Image (cartoon, rainbow, N blue to C red):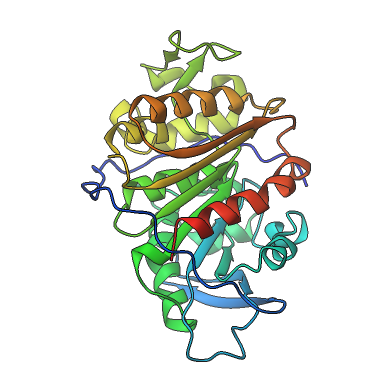
Length: 323
């Protein structure tokens, strides 16, 4: 798979809900028995106004224990990816079976909208038909955090509560998972980011140096180095830097209380987009705020060779921080 470019967007400016008080770690769910199964489903999103696809991992025992309810983890794809990436390239089902994971994993088609709602008008069907779907504004935050969660709870035997719900992603999806979890602490108990854009406004240095961080304070020239993509993102988010900060994980982390959200971060030290530097920056913010989290930097690029090795780690982390 092509390396997924983890740039980030924002189009709405609202303060995240007040964080919850610190609570003891949840008890671990009883391990699943047997081998899980994977199914591909079609469902309708009211936010997008179209039918969407998702790949769903159902744990061993789901079919044979009809009285049992299960936690749910949502795994988001990266830019240019789709709902099949986690199972086809990330070997998520095999990792879940090896862990005897007692959780449902939902992998939606995340399009390429960075999992934030857009204020721009759109014709979704027309965009997809004429081939411009790569950079279409949409309502992916509502699509994921509202439509998909509601559909999952209505379709499967889930524990429909915050303490049993987590979200993860890679690259664009890593950013999406972080900002959705941080903006919706009442909905997700844990979050994992594989090579995500952990700081939207990080400008340097490269390599990262603690205490010497430079942040973007004028978004009018943000992303010019990447050409049309940068132009499109600036146009979508607009000139008000407050819009950007409202969805920037590093900015949102300044408002998280210890114990309010369990956070997992990783990135390859040879990341093709130098996202390891912003990951280290977010890590230091969390340390300074005394927010317990898991953090890993190790050999690897921005690709599934790195992510497939880390999937068991994020699954285990989410398992250990939900019930």
